[in-house]
Image 1 (cartoon, helix red, strand yellow):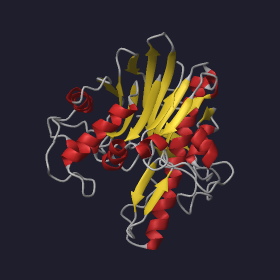
Image 2 (tube, helix red, strand yellow):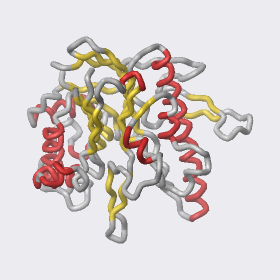
Image 3 (tube, helix red, strand yellow):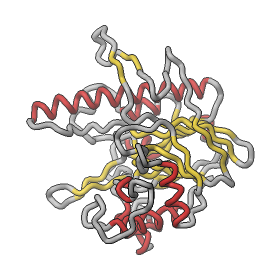
Image 4 (tube, one colour):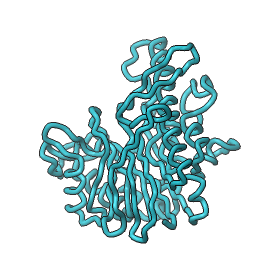
Length: 330
C-alpha cells in the first residue's frame, strides 16, 4: 500500500465559490504560473505518485458556499484519479484545510476524533499546558486542527491516521526586528505546545496497541530558525519521542550531513532557493517490521523525478512542496 502527504500551495485558489475547477490562463497564486498550468501539474503529480491515499495539506476551502470534499472529488473526477473519495476532519478559518483523497476499493476511512481531557483533548478543543514553567497554564488551540481517522484496509488491517499542519514559526506581520523576535518566539512556543498535544494523542493510541501513522507538514526541521535551541527540542523531535519513526527526520536530526533531506523549495529575494525538510510520514514502532519504504519526490534529488522531463516540470509548477510517500504492508 502507498500513502502520501502533499502540501499543494494555494490549491484553494483553483476553485470557484461552487467548487468548480478554474482552468484558464489567468494567473494562479504561484509566481508566473497560470491556473491551467498549476491544475495540470497537480494532476500529473498525483497520477505519477499513484497513492492509495493522499493527505492534501492546504486543501480547498470549506465555507459558506464551498466544500472541501466536493472540490477534491470534482478534481479527482476531472482527471480520472482512482483516489475518487475524500474525507476531512474539522474545518478551519484559514482557507487551508486538511483532507484525505483515497481509493475506496482499497480503504475504508472515517473521521474518528478521540478525547482525553486530562492527556489529549480532541483536536478542536483546548489544550492546557505550562509552556515556560511559570506556574501559569497556557491555553492552546489549533488554527488548523489535525485530522484523526480510523482506517481499514481491504485485507482487514486497521490503523489510526493523523494528518497535521502545524503552525508556521514565521513572524508574519512584524514591523521591527524586536517585534519579529517576539512573534517568532511566541510562534515557536505555540508550535511546540501543539507538538506535545499531538505526541500525547499518539501515545494514547500506541498504549492501546494500535498502529499509528502521522503525516503532514510539521513546519519544522533542523536549522530553520535562530530560536530552535531556545527550548531544547524541536516539534519534530517531540513527536518522534512519543514512539514514532521517520528515516528522513532521523537523518536530519542525527549526525550533521552536508546534504540533508528536503521536501520543500522556496525562492529567496536574491534569486536563490532555500530548501527545507518540512513534510513527514511517521509510523509507530509496531509498524517498522511491515517493510516500510519512504520516498521524497524531489525534482532535483530523486533520480526518476529528475530524468522524467514531464514529471520534473510538473513538480516545480504544482507547488513549493514535494510529495512524500510511504510504501508499507498493511
